[in-house]
Image (cartoon, rainbow, N blue to C red; front, side, top):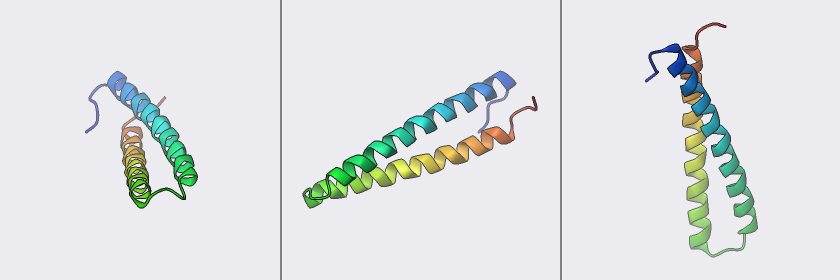
Length: 76
């Protein structure tokens, strides 16, 4: 769903951009943590793998949301 007004749409685009930056930051941190935990217990590895997969899905969804919002952005 896209916001109705131009101001609301621009605010939604900024929010989506901020969320994407934060999600990518979390993904980088999880990548580092996963590398550092290479010798961890299987349960720890499984949880890290699940967390990585969830954040990857989140970034995919946010990328889709950004595309949808930008399609509705008014021309400059």
